[in-house]
Image 1 (tube, rainbow, N blue to C red):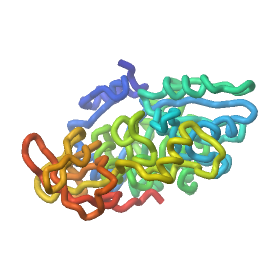
Image 2: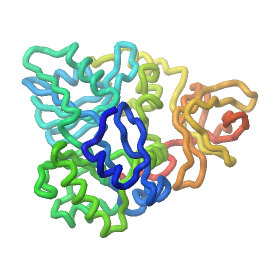
Image 3: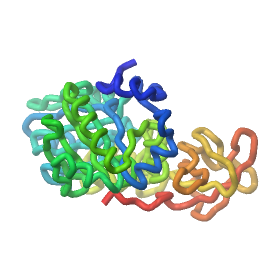
Image 4: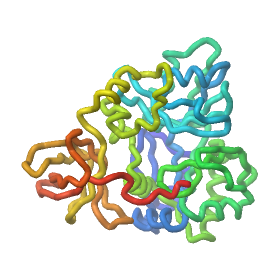
Length: 362
């Protein structure tokens, strides 16, 4: 089991720890708990350690062109100093991983994949590498901190950092006299930033941020709140809404595919799905009773016929209601009432649009 550079900080706070992609990371803190941590992000500001996320660099002449022939999204849609959500698919259109690509220049791209998939992403890219391109796994070179919530601009201002950068843009700043990559991204649906200090500087930057959020009634948050926040937004989690068996088209992530590109990994399968339709798609489910859906629970229609499966489910702290993401047969329509088998009890839910709560990322 690997540890974040902030591992001792979490232990000092008596965090409840768990395995996330081979990394021992905090789920929640006893002084607050998931519900309070969730509410802090929606209403004020919360600070997460997500250093388990991967990091890798692709450098050399033509790096953007190299990645554009493999990743789903189109890096030519963005300029230097911007980031982009994208996916790496296999030849069958299954998702090896979804990741953020930071475009430094046409010859230098920084990637942030998911923790457990970093080595697979690096290996897949190295298997197709062209002369002059160097791919480096930097998993333990940088920490990743997420500062999320409506008060984040004020927190950064209090630290002498200008926060006026566009959504999905990044810049280099100083916090606690340490170099930090500051990006206007996040995974909560709230206005926020992700910060990447060097691994060796993580504690200094963390301490500065913890002190700064205290003035705004902010709290340190675990990955339990991160999960409830992202589920309310309908954001996919690899291994749940995206996987080697779930394509971007099925997950309603076609917006992250550069369909005008000549080629990318898995493009023939995805183009066929886009044209001819898929047998299943990702939907939102909102409980009509006290049932709390969980991943793996079966979904049936009113006649008791199985029509899909819950991929992620939780109690929504914002809505005070059970919610879920589910892969359902393409014949299902919005507004349909379905039945979820919640540990032997039949719970009713309505098929709804995503997100469950309003986005404030911009």
